[in-house]
Image 1 (tube, rainbow, N blue to C red):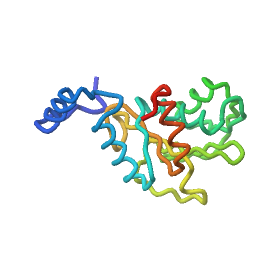
Image 2: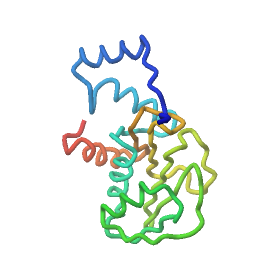
Image 3: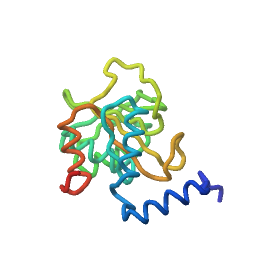
Image 4: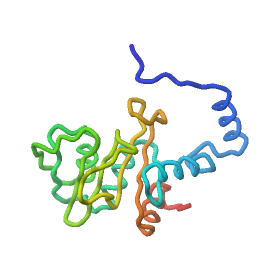
Length: 175
């Protein structure tokens, strides 16, 4: 088996693990998560970022926030299946469409609600008339350009949307 990525754990990473263990914050919140969220928001040029356990979890929360449940959504036939699986899970009505075969992003919409799946593309400029989208999703799986092993993030600029999403991600406990 050829691994997608090999962990590179040196003295700095060991120190970070020791700090996390000493502080009692090994997840899903704490100073390292806050630092990660700030770095992702900055890299994306957005006001906020919310870390999630996976890119699919970010897609799921954002699709619910956008009101995609029980709605008809066009999904590119050749797109990566994560969004299609999320839409099936929230009982959206999927219509497979041809075209829209972008490598760096997929755009999904219902009425005026837009969602941009930028799974492999942090830092990529999107030449599209609706940029920036209200919500953008990133994935940091081991085969991506920027990786955290596994994980994802939702980024945006609307403060009320951030509050609702953060509450949902943290099972209603907020932060």
